[in-house]
Length: 74
Picture 1 (cartoon, one colour):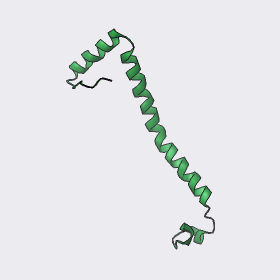
Picture 2 (cartoon, rainbow, N blue to C red):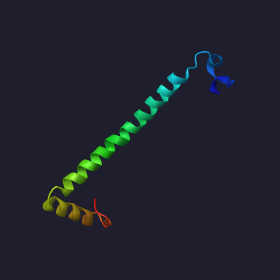
Picture 3 (cartoon, rainbow, N blue to C red):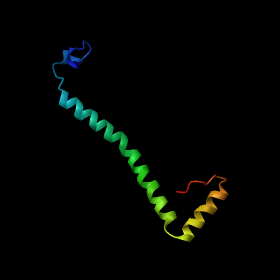
Picture 4 (spheres, helix red, strand yellow):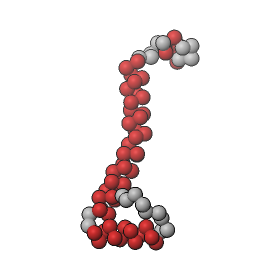
């Protein structure tokens, strides 16, 4: 279906479905890489704050200093 589009380079002569799917997959993975790294950092921070009662207390103090609403937990 895509090959029949008139706007393809070289009239779709070098168009290959598997190659396009692979390229799209690489683009999506690269885009999600940053998101995954941020998620890992957030999880590490949550684990650290939950590590002991002292760390949790320090976290709650930081929340108060920053005037944030803390209602649901980490």
